[in-house]
Image 1 (cartoon, rainbow, N blue to C red):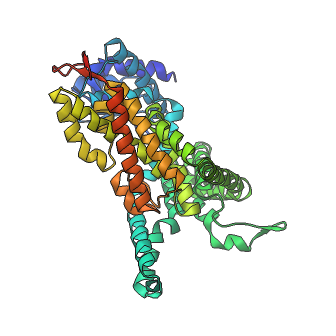
Image 2: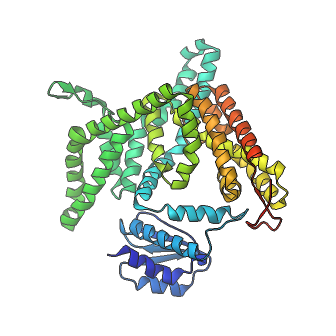
Image 3: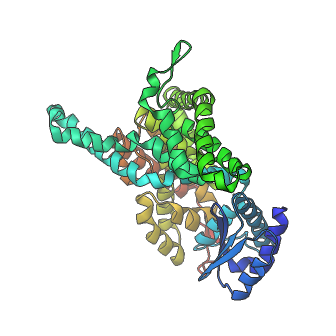
Length: 461
């Protein structure tokens, strides 16, 4: 199947580019958000070779293609869509075009490698509420015990400690379940494979002179094992007769993948996990403020490139291994630099639309949701995006210099304060990023848009 040709045929039916708001995919479907969808589109799509079916809901068309084909077709479709948008003048943006700019960046980033990173990130998204809840419990409990260590012997404090540790106790099983589903296998088989390499009885099994280690490799090992298990399961289903599929496929998947996990994949995961943990901690402890400055300044450009999804399993691995991730407080400063820059723009600009955009986006920006400020203000203006990144770099330097860690993921900005190891230092880093972003943007200036709100440039601000 030539997925570029299939994507071109789908585009000819659903286009032009201005009719397509967003193109994404799940395991089996290409999902198209359209301005206008007609019954004729669904009929035409069903007639294409490679299309299994079409499901229409309001302005969304779900083109059913099957596992693997959906992801490859989506990548080809987004690349095609990006080219058409560029040819139609979608490469220029003005204030208030944040949604369109964000969508175009997502389209350009829809390469197979980046889609794989996004798939891995989706494994952990359902866990974020658990990280936040357990992280908050642990953070508040630590503050309480610092104030009065004698409380540690009380039953209700011990109960809270168990609650705060709940996400970590079952994390490998949660990740295994979600990973198998994302990789196209049976979720429960992924959970079982994760349970096998986490089982406490492994410590009583000797391979030569070395005992097996329960949980070795953490979630890195779980990802390797479940990816292999899902791959194996899909291939077994192709060769095992249908009448024996329910009996033999799960059995052979667990047996083959289970032994592969214990002999090869878990040790390999352990090596990778140890390298990640020691590499990150060494870089921050030895590089100190300089490492934080570089990471804080480069984070938003990394997000623009679409490779930021790779950080999610690294954060989780660090929390699982050390109790905190030293990276998240540093990277969170990137959004804080944007806030400082936007405040400077607000006081310098004469454009009322720009002022209104900033005022509406600042509250959510302070709470850690930076997209409205980034895609609606600093990125379209150009120079302020760079100065904001530099502001974030100064904030990152503060976090790295004092080795501030976070016991949860999924939150940023001010809310992250509650789950950091040093809340007052974290707040000092936020303030540093605000001030640096403001001052650098103020003195560097920017081309103030004309009152029309278009990208025409006016006087130097």
